[in-house]
Image 1 (cartoon, rainbow, N blue to C red):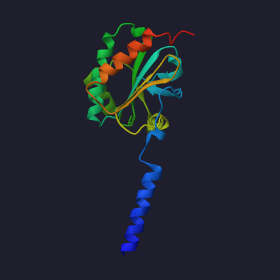
Image 2 (image 1 turned 135 degrees about the horizontal axis):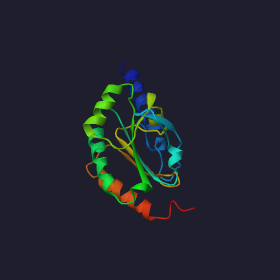
Image 3 (image 1 turned 90 degrees about the horizontal axis):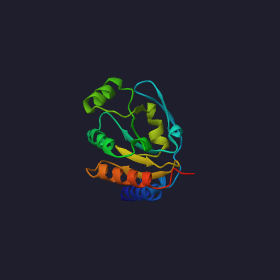
Image 4 (image 1 turned 135 degrees about the vertical axis):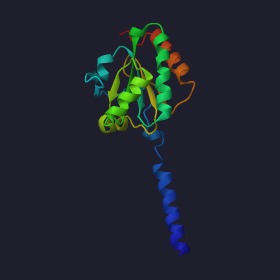
Length: 175
């Protein structure tokens, strides 16, 4: 019995060591070109990432059951105070849109002004290799990942403001 327990334990550790638990090899990398996607918005419009090439894009992936997501999205309203608002776009990506009523309640409660994208079956979330909610991504004017942040932190808005400001003041968007 000890021998079997030992072998099972050893096998488990080898699996963890070899496969990891969503290690860095599975994550988006800074500088990597973001894969294009098209999602429907809550208003039944189409949102394609490529249509915003030349602008900075901030995406926040969230779910209706996630309190930290709601905290982060509420803070995103502070980005409205940044200068050069035409140079960037903010969109939230809900990964549980089948709960349409709950999505609408969150949007109304937080008074969203930015597009709410509906990620049916969390396809984009999975394609972008995400594991945590909320996850925030900034994509630069050339379509490359410039910031990838998992989880919520009260300092997230300052990080976003700083990164957006740097990207907008750089010559990234100029060909």
